[in-house]
Image (tube, rainbow, N blue to C red; front, side):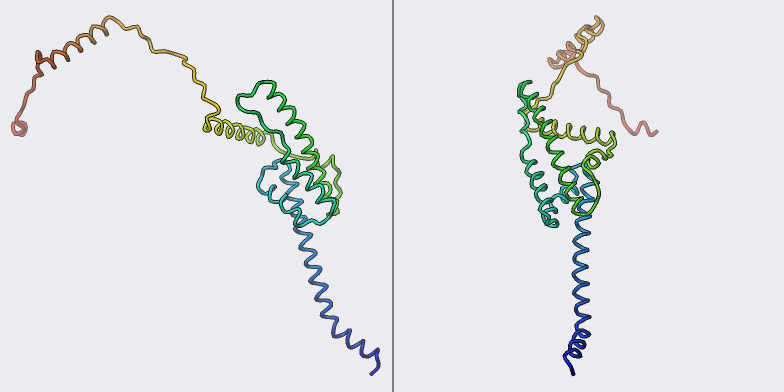
Length: 219
């Protein structure tokens, strides 16, 4: 048997094993890509509601599933931005402090949004999607009704927390008082009632009580 024959037999024997290993690697690669695609889809579908639990879960999976330096760098920048948000003023803060906070919050929100879009853009590039940053930022549909509900829920939650913690008292206003004017007839009736009760207590008056035999009613 020649060397060529030996190599031929060896290749025939090893071919199924090699094919099996290649198939396993392809399957692992496809599963990884599918997980990355699902993360991207979740971030895209919830980019208008970033406090959604599924959005948060997708963010926390990025550093696990994506190994691209461009993606992980933008992910770290965006995550760091969360902890750099301006601190809200106290309940008794001045109007100037509140205005300053509002402006700082507006500036931070703009920068924070840009970092999120940069993250989405890098993920889309790594997955071979053709999105530009303008499309990622502008093509968001979120009905005004849902937005109003979310804002109202946040306002109610903050007001409830402020009230329960004692930082914000409840304002009360009296809008009407019961009339103190009484007619002479009512005054006279009240005087007679008081006098009658006093005489009952002093024993000057008695209450008439009649006792009837129940058997008489049955006849």
